[in-house]
Image (cartoon, rainbow over all chains, first blue to last red; front, side, top):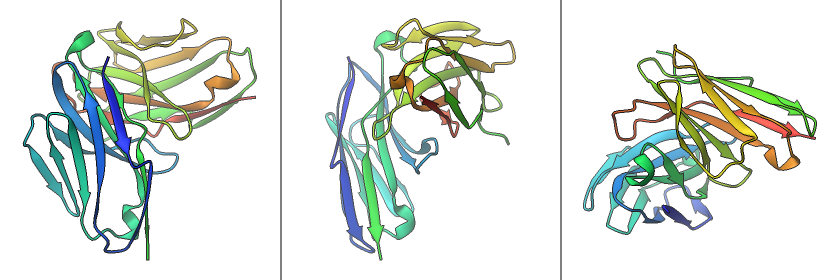
Amino acid sequence: EDQVTQSPEALRLQEGESSSLNCSYTVSGLRGLFWYRQDPGKGPEFLFTLYSAGEEKEKERLKATLTKKESFLHITAPKPEDSATYLCAVEGVTGGGNKLTFGTGTQLKVEL
Amino acid sequence: DAGVTQSPTHLIKTRGQQVTLRCSPKSGHDTVSWYQQALGQGPQFIFQYYEEEERQRGNFPDRFSGHQFPNYSSELNVNALLLGDSALYLCASSTWSAVGGYTFGSGTRLTVV
């Protein structure tokens, strides 16, 4: 059974204070690892897909990296508008694929 | 370009009642998945529909059922509602043949009282 563990559960940063969010996973054959951003009461908003160890992707102040056991979401010089819950999910080959297994998320608060 | 549309946005039901939630997928997508997200938790996979058939199912009881129509839209039905069914129900559309590419709707907030 695919499993995803995210840490920390909550993170409070000052504006401009860079940090990283962690996503540890176990999966029988990784088809893809996904990062989403979720604002309160809204659906998850897609950020990145990573397919294989060593892959990196960037978007504005965010950078996602992937190893065989974990992924990191690095946030550089965050702004208050980056405050949200960040979800990590994996899609594995077992069970026919096409199913996401999510972690519980990291709730990020960026303060002025 | 319309994304995933879910209705209604909010719903209050009484224990024991039945509820139907609706989802219209993003244009070009043929697969619909449903997720349940309890407060403070990550989304949990309920089931997935492609070509009007249930293709995969998560660890949810038979009280949860669904349907997909020829136009790819989908319904989620929950019978005999329990207080624990209170959650945000998310619909995600995708293309069956592709990895990832999921687009989520804004969800339906169901409250069971």
